[in-house]
Image (cartoon, rainbow, N blue to C red; front, side, top):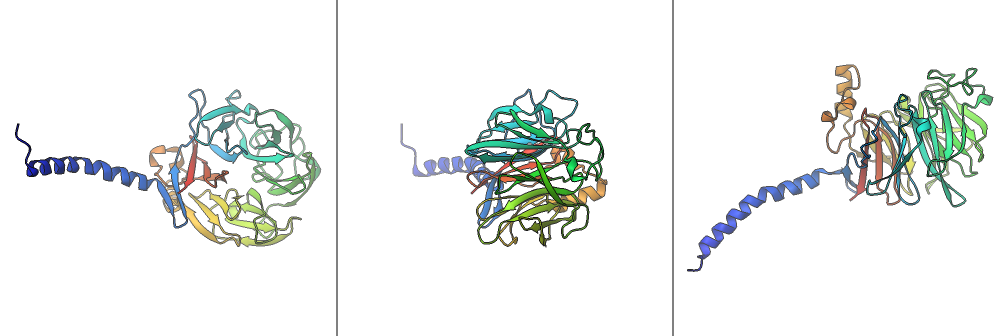
Amino acid sequence: MAAKSPRRRFLKTAAIATICAPAILTAKRSAAQDVIGDGDYKFKCEHMFPQLPDRYSWQITHNVTVDPDNNLYVIHEGDAKKADHPSIFVFDSEGQFIRAFGEQFQGGGHGLEIRVENGTPFLYVSGYQQVKSIAKLTLSGETVWQSFAPMKSGAYAPGEASDPKRIWGRDRFMPTNFAFLPDNGFLLADGYGSFKIHRYDAEGSWVSCFGGEGKGKGTFNTPHGIWIDARTGGDAEIVVADRANNTLQCFTMEGEYKKTVTGFGLPANIDTNEKLMLVPELVARVSLLDRNHNTVATIGDDSERILASQKANKGHVIRTDESKWEQGKFVHPHDACFDKEDNIYVAEWVATGRVTKLTRV
């Protein structure tokens, strides 16, 4: 058989290249679409990162935290009618399911943080709605202690600790998030109840409180998140995500008001690594702040579309319809945390739950 001419070889090669080119370009385009952020703050965005076994289901994801082994813990609000369904799920850094526990928080699961105490990590959990309690657990779910409304504070209605019910109000206990103190005590934000910040000792006993309802400068309108900012470059301070006032408020470690940082869309909680402060905003974005609380990056911003939808529909329509969620965009970030490699996990307040992993590029 005669050898193929150079022209025939060229035409065949060109034809193959033409057929393959769209697929190659599409693959590159898809990979690029998965990367969000700008400059030094670019992340691969993986929505729906951890997958639950078929026997479980998400019911409004609320908070995320990471243990010393870089495993991810997620708490969802849960359905009070499903009392035997866990509210806390654990995954490895690849999103593979490890275990589940926390049935006692089902229907009111909210806050979740991990602290290492004398070499042993413990899980701190808060529950609102009908649960109205806080607890310290082992990482396998065993209860170390559980407590209810701190009646010594004088902030709560009679029976709020002894007979909690799903009743809202400023005289009710609806704890949302924790911050850990250098003396091994902790702070607790009563973000949906009294709007006070409670201080507890290392044994979990109530010590004092500050704040209450107001428009700022030491008073709050939904103090939903709280954190101790101990980054280098300034004195350690308490930072409160004053959600409905759309601000962060900064306090001394004794609870004295220092300053207010504005420009947020319902900031829900706070986390820090060595350099950055992470602020999930319920109005569709996640912000990164420097030590002076200047925003250095805004990630996954879809606030304009979400706000327009809420106005047009007089309610939260997009959060209940996954077909309206867009790749690389957030709907309602409710909590976020750094992992041990400075990647970010984001839990969103959406009807069927969503946890996104942002991996540094």
